[in-house]
Image 1 (cartoon, rainbow, N blue to C red):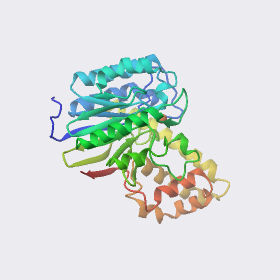
Image 2: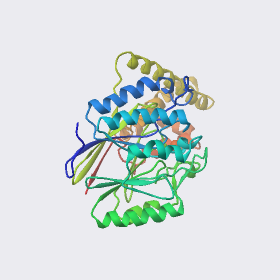
Image 3: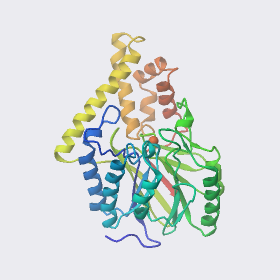
Image 4: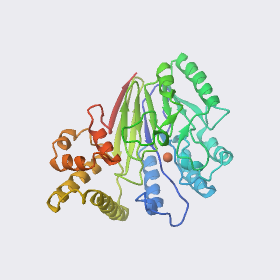
Length: 362
Ligand SMILES: [Fe+2]
């Protein structure tokens, strides 16, 4: 396979939060496929090669802890891609530095990432592919900090480079781990959103139309003065990833479910069933004090239908169904003052756009 040439269309796969762990028996208490991650990643990276992907974009939390073993495991997968002619653009994430070190990250990954220009103050860099310039930002803070921010010096570097790339007529795509937008359900937006607060305005000033991030683990697309695609994680939820077709005058993004095969498909199904039951038990616990036994089951079923749609990026497409779903309306009354209630309501807000598809015209 040959990498795209200047001016031609190409296909990128975009995902985030691989949370790759080299532990022999990682915990799956939060991420349902954690114990199946090796066969899942083998299948996923095989698909990238077989389907002639030109570019893989990873939006951070690429490893679970950033330990030497985790980082080397990721480097092995990425090296195989590079040998197959697939380019890689990757941002850092907070988990990559839970016990990871910047020096090792740079030593292992920068020879693969081959930045065109690098910020001297962080692991941020830019990479040009044809008429697109990708800014892969490093927003990690100290160890075990869930928050994300860009240093003052990195902000100055970003502004200088945005000006230069805009001047040379490049289409700019901004990548970070934390997102530029906040949601109504976020009790602590600083755990989720990129700081400083003015990054989005800075990007808009330099004509940036698209930003991509991760960290939330579920798919989401925000549409404001720019479009922000939040990419989901492969190991949990509906096991989705994003496919992007980049052309000279437009970019099309679509969310896709990863297709598991054979024995792995059966194992994933079993894990998903138990994740479904665990989630239902959480809702059951919250609702059962407020609802009688006849109300409870329809409410639980409605909540689970919403939850599955949320994880597949399909709430927008099914909004009318949910707004008229009596079980969901009743459940929302009970959940009114909880973060769950705010989350569900905000997903049904008319300002929300499709989470599974986006098109940008240049
Ligand atoms: Fe994260």
